[in-house]
Image 1: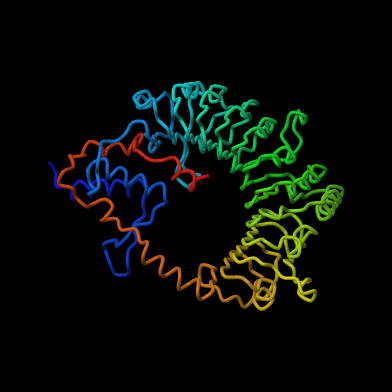
Image 2 (image 1 turned 180 degrees about the horizontal axis):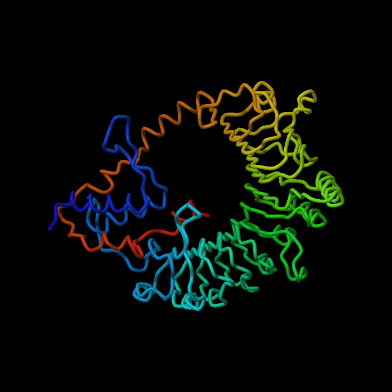
Length: 448
């Protein structure tokens, strides 16, 4: 039997080599004093350490009914992994990319492989994130009636999801972000009465608009609190659909991503673009009163619209604007006594926006956190080298939390247990499909 500290060192080094965790070094030190990791990785690392007997609170053997399978090293999935059949009661399947880097490629050799999903009757979490060559989601997925979280983010070849996706009555989180080839938003999305988070909802012209879900349909979902919308500016006649946003009863977090906002070429095309921008500016749109966070990406017009004014969204606490043509964030309202209630502000890649720190403080009197990046026309901003400014009380609180919540890698992976068994063979599993034992709730809070 290896000493437990040696076994912990082996797993610890493997986790670093695979990119699960990032060691943090103090200046002039060769030994890391702590590690940085995402919440799901932290949870899985703890469970792996518990499984091989490296923690002092190992109480009972792993429960197969709570198994979570994660694809760590398979770049090409060409067969149904044998380990899936061994644990038929798998609740969480992370088949796709868990890494944040989009360069990490995973490919599905044969779409028929996904037809095996009907064998996992207890599945509550499924991630196909970033898997190439999936053109449609198989109908057999509708048999997973316990499924709560479905992650399809960055499945770039995906063209269709089942029209009857509304049969997944337990679904609470659905992510279709960056699935730009989707040809339709199924009408049955409005039947997902337990849905809380929906990302990647596309507004535009489809081949069969009568069967496509609209914002009006979604407004009837009683639990929806987070919505991410993608809209193409060229479909400007569909912008009037946005007026249905005011019908949402519980929406707290809204992201709108604009596509096709810059056209170049002939003057005729340019005049069409100007007409679209004018229509967009006058778009009849009212944001829901429950909204707390608004994220605008590639905002296509230069000034604030009628619906994007401080007086129209009083309860807003977080405002993110990334990219686009915005050159005025409300300076003209200063003399009218209008100001934002926003406390957290992130402004990125706004090359046309010109504002001084003194003006921003008047517009955002309740501001406690600011991040600016690639905004060359900002002047006199007291930001650090990361472009961040924080109110002093927030800085003091953050230092306290950083001290009390520091991740200590040695206590997590190297503490021994005299009663635990040697887990040498188990540590090698992190190179293929990592099987650990976790709850779906941890994943749902961090990845969707």
